[in-house]
Length: 493
Image (tube, rainbow, N blue to C red):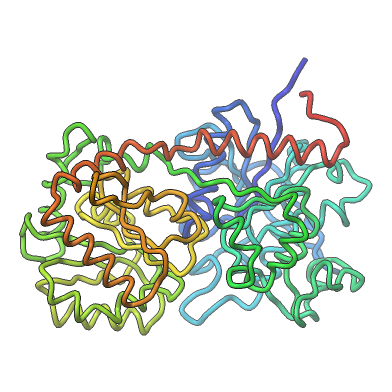
């Protein structure tokens, strides 16, 4: 009798339980889509503070986890993914994970992050043993789980888990897990692994580099980013490593959760609407203006930013031209936290020009939904963007994205043609103050002079197929490739 493919996702984030960005969204949605396609898929995640511990079933065993000369222990709780019966296992280790942040707090990154996430990776194997579950595929996400393919090739050599094929997904190459080489013993691996093929990287210990070396297959979150990351300007020092493995690399565009991000059913917004009836969007705009304390003006274009406030997102460029933009007839809302200088700049603008700007310097998921529903345009002038999710959320809500043509933004936004009204957004080929000024001016012109084009772009964006089905099918093909590479024969079930 055939059996389904068995997959274990190992990750540091999974929405809605723990999320700081796109990684959490992907791990929160992809397994459910895979489950719907018949995969026996499971997820393992640290049990962080803020997760409802008592809502998860406490399992009747304790994991014994070898840790570089010492032994760690943790309990396990089991729950289910949102909108799916796919199981998720939470590692209950209070010293590592019961903290006021996932990776750090107001004082900075936690100093023992190597130990915390090495424990996650070693515990994933211990969990499989306790559950008597031997995955066909171990799917690791970003540097926090990059030791999984390393362990499958080293510590697990000679066990049943050495036969597990490994896939490593890079969500953002800018985060690599860099530590002092002297901390290698924390991983439980010997100094022979501190070489220029595995961990050693310009004098540092690089977890992501080692994972890239050991993984059977590598994926990233958009086709364009898969090409960009092989070039020095976007490779973050690992472009040579990735070029050497380009035959094992696949760019798979992220999908979005079309249940959570659906303006026809969203309980967080003021009125429901769909592409055939957009009247509710005008109601959402008015409600958002009132909530923010902006003048209620249906005729003025409302621009929005929902983002980490960092230079990677190009928001320093936006801030540099803000005085000029505020001479135009527009409104702007900025939601997010990040670089103190950027927070301060938008806060000052909000205080001085409250008739046009509102800065909401916090993470607020409900407000993010209300902004997507109420705004006319969504700004993503990112210097680089591996995939990006908000431009897809925006199109789902009939909000027109304005983006820099990089990574997943280039793969998902179709540039406006002012002669025909074709397109789903406004795209600039290069990022800079002048380019951003001009593309915003172009959007402003179209809003006032081509309202019929704006209406068609809204509706066209809302019909784009951004669900997970196609991407989940691509991952399934990648899994089969990884399995055959590892085992020397196809997966027969």
